[in-house]
Image (cartoon, rainbow, N blue to C red):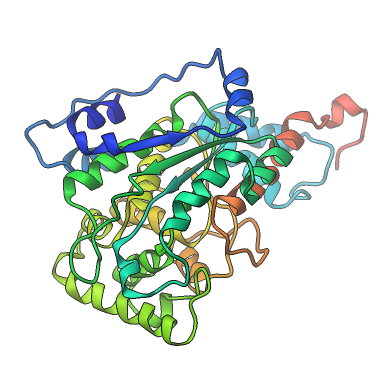
Length: 380
């Protein structure tokens, strides 16, 4: 198993842990007979830590063409005019193509990755980094917005604590992570799919991580730092100017190393960013559809897209957040978000809400009667 091999190779991941939530007991009961089969790969013990990820990114599995054809054929027979369900139909086709079966969502899962950032020392956020740990505890206790959405939509929830006592390097002064630490964190993120899921919603928590997302987007797409920096958790006035300056300084510092997307990830990213990238990649290897949440999660996805233009074909964007740079970053990925509710909370909340739409798309496709079954006349 790719993730297990990397975790064994890179001992720094021992600082990471998965946090149990109130939803865990129900999720374990639901999935107790589930077994995941993963592709195995030989890991490059003598190579550089990123070598294995480069190999995976070069050899991504594609969609199931037969399942897609079958879904389109069934859709043509359902009791509705062609195209009447709009984007729900495309979502059903997407599910069929990536799961290789009739569209269904039986084990949806929200995975939240939490990390802390050294760049907060630059005074770019009104909240202290201790809030990250406090919110992880809130997730575990069932008190956050994402907990309520998961209950309402019957979604599983996993929370991953990524060495919160060890913030990444301050990107205005040094690389956020070593290559070894970044690769280990990506491998740990791949464990998000362990235990089974057929729809993965990717979210995050981390004070300072909209600064990180802005730096990644600036490095990938150019423009100016101001184009990509927004208020995050409430930065304004002089604090917002410090945030813009931090992004400018960080990208300038690492400018000689930004031709490689994985170098952008390790130098300007963070542990939750790396873990989300790993989770999205692991889902692709197992053909699991993915819903990406907000600005920060989209930045993680953008790294993979930059490494392989087809890397996000199994992904949809759950929503466009109120963070100013998010819509621009979504457009750079060639995606269209499912929802636009003005949210900018993170926690996977937008992706979780979008999961309800995906579940509805699957239910309509699989549960509706055909014209023949219902005795309804089809068009001539």
